[in-house]
Image 1 (cartoon, rainbow, N blue to C red):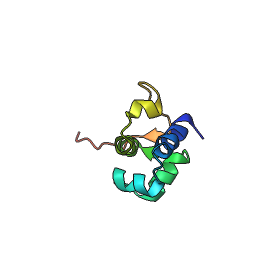
Image 2 (cartoon, rainbow, N blue to C red):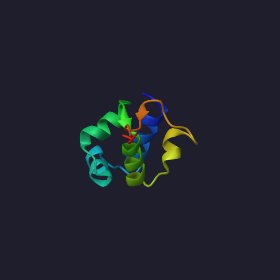
Image 3 (tube, rainbow, N blue to C red):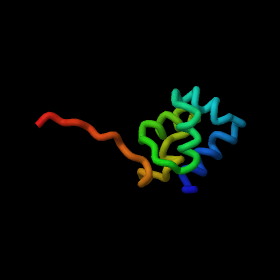
Length: 80
């Protein structure tokens, strides 16, 4: 488990929040929260939603000015 996954879990457990409660607050599925805490790939937007629901700056979860390697930004289509 990476530091990011551990920090997400710790931030959720501190106020005794369940994964389901976090999922509702972040507007994602409970399975998505489970994947995030299990260090499975997720989008950067998912991490931002989770951080917002936890009332924590995403930098506190990932490390200052650091984007974890497992997080993937969605591809952006561009007109050529």
